[in-house]
Length: 553
Image 1 (cartoon, rainbow, N blue to C red):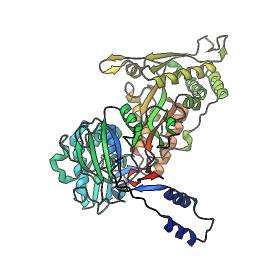
Image 2 (cartoon, rainbow, N blue to C red; image 1 turned 180 degrees about the vertical axis):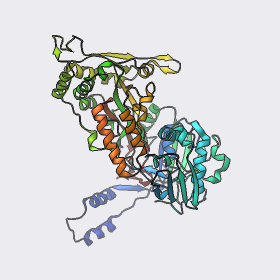
Image 3 (cartoon, one colour; image 1 turned 90 degrees about the vertical axis):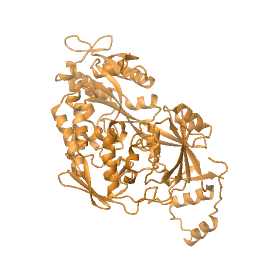
C-alpha cells in the first residue's frame, strides 16, 4: 500500500451514540449492527487507497485474446458481461436488465441496463453486444472465451449464433439449437463497437469496459494501473487505485505477499492454515473447479459383466474420502459422489448416496462373486482369480501419488490388491506417458484430475463417442448419452432440476467414475482489505469493488 496516501481517521462515535440512545438501549438490536459499530470504532478508514494485485507474464491487454488466468481475473475489474455467476454458479444478469427465452429455446431477448457507459464515455447499446459477439468469432481459437463457448455449445453450433438489435437497449440472440447454457454463453466481456478494427488488436490495445475500474496506463511487462470508475453504473468502488504487478511465477507472488508488496495472492498447495495466526492476513477459501476421480476401464470384462456394478460399488464404499481429504488435502477439499460441482445450484439431493462403509463394501464384493479370502487376505472368485488391479497415477504429481497410496491401503482392507503404476516423463514431444496411457486405456483404474468448468458440461467425460479422448473410463451407455442430451436441452428451471436429478441417479447407480472430491482453493488477503470479497474459481476478485481499506487501531 502506498505510504504517501492521505489517511483520514473517521470518528463515528457521536453519530453512533445518538443512534444507540435513540433506540432506548433495547437489547433486541441487530447483533450484526453492533458488530459493525464496534468494527468502525476500531478502524482507521483509508481514503484514496491503493492495493496491489499479482499478474504473471501475459501477451495482450485485450481480454478477448487472454490465455493468462491472472489477467483473465484482473480484466473482470475493467470489463463486464451480460451475465455473471453468483456464489452457486447460477448465471445472473450483469449488464442485462432482464431477459426472456423463447418457448423453443431458439432465441433470447435481452433488455440492457440503461445509462451504462464505457470508460471513454460512450453509452452501452445493443450494437456493442452484436459487435462483441462477431468479434469473438473473428478472434477464433486464440480467444479463451471462444474456446469456452465452443466447449459448451459445440464449434459448429457456436458459428451459427447470431444477434440483431430490437431497439437501442434491446438485443435478440439466435441459436441454432436449444441449450441449457444460453446464459453461460453470454458471460464474455462486452467491448464497445466504437473500438472498430482496434478491438481485434493484440498490441497497443487500450482496455475500455463498463466495469468498476478504468484503465490508466501499462508499463510494459511491469505494471498496470487502474482507477475507480466514478461514473460506474453501480456503487463507486471505495478502493480508489489498483496496481497490477507482473511477476515471473506464482512462487514469487507469494514471496511478495509475505513481504507486504502484494495485497492479495493465491495460495499454492494446501498449507494455507500457516497464515491463520498472522493478524496481517485473512483467508478466503472456496471450492475450485478441479475434480479428482478414479477412471474405471470399462473395456475390462470384469467391469462389464453382471457383477461389475457390485464391484464398482464395493470400491466406492471402501474408500474413505474424508480421511483422504484430511491427510492429503489438509481438510481443504469437498467429497462428492458425482461429477457435479458441490456449489452448483442445480445439485440434487440424489447426488449423495455413498459414504465410507466397510461392511457395505464387503457385502457388494461378496455379491460380485469375489468371496473367497485366502491367507494373503486377497479376495478370489470360484475360479481362483485374485481381485487385483493396476492403478495408474501421474508420477509427476506428488499429491496424487500420496492419494494413490491411501487408496491402495483402503482397498487392501476389503481384500482388493492394488499395484500402483506411476508414470513420469513424456511419451513424445506432444504428450506425457501418463496422458497417453489414460487416453489409450492402458490401465485398470486411473486417478485423474479434471477441470469441469463453470458451464457444468459433462459430455467429454461420459459420451460414448468420446472414448480415446476425455472419456477416460471408456464408458458406453446409450441411456447416459440420451441423459446428457436432456441436460443440454433443458430450458426452464423445472426441466433443469428434473434432468439433473435423473442424471445424478443414473450416475450414482452406474458409477462410470469413482468420484473422490473437488479440491478447495484459497486467496490470502491483506487484512486491511475489509468487506465482502467472495472469490470463486471463475472470478478471484468477486466483490472487490465493494471492499474498502481500513487499518486496525
